Image (spheres, rainbow, N blue to C red):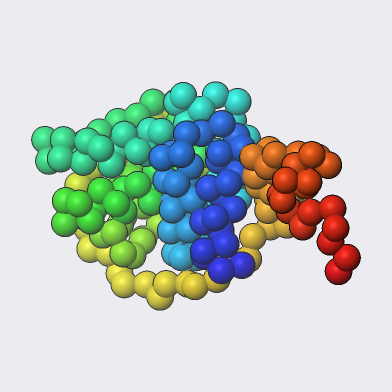
Length: 188
């Protein structure tokens, strides 16, 4: 899959899961960024979208991180009870770009550092963390080769497609009569 396809599918799935437009766009960009770094952005997004409560989803917490980026100059930020904390990494990358600094995301003895372009990851992030700490650091980030295609797990992709399908209006004869879809007279 191209990274554009990943972005679009995760965005549609996020809308189908009930996220508002802005968070759905953030979800698509986050999955795309992780895939570009060689990580499973599709699987991570699928896990996050399977949550039943989106008011404290990692997407909304990540957006909050980007909104309060300047506050990190005063010290680290902490978030509690975070599902799929790996999704903080793309938002930390956005924060690193805003601050023109290197940002570290740490949880359960794993850490990720990013300068906004590249990523150093010490170990695989867990599916849940009681505390995620995000701070500015002076640890250098090695330049990595960005990836332009993703190979998602078919089950994760199917889960995203099922959520995306929730955004489609059902086809009816009446809608076809007024020109929706191929119409009733399509003879291809």
